[in-house]
Length: 119
Image 1 (cartoon, rainbow, N blue to C red):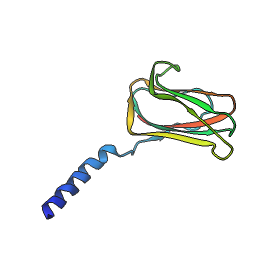
Image 2: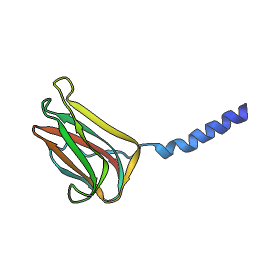
Image 3: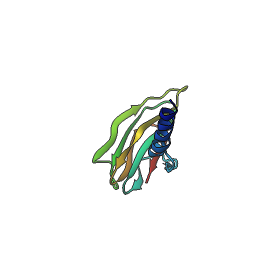
Image 4: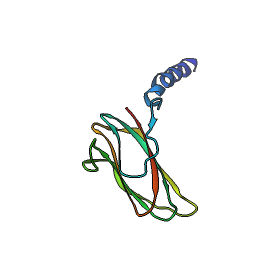
């Protein structure tokens, strides 16, 4: 039993750092379409704050110049209400991208968002 416990402990200690999010970076607050980062890295998620009236359509691309090309995640609509102004979408494990992160936001009102990624 002691050998099994030690084997499990060693496995956990060796494998845990593989999934650690030590280098995750926030993009800083954005309010319109934006190039977040160029070059390869990992996409972890997005947090969105709306005006509590208008829904937001979000597309996140593996692209360093414009809102086109390969989607990192499917385009989605973040609905909103007076009591639920914020939405977030996170993935685990992170999604690898090669070219960069470009976010295309469509909203009739005001919106703020922040991307979480690692280089």
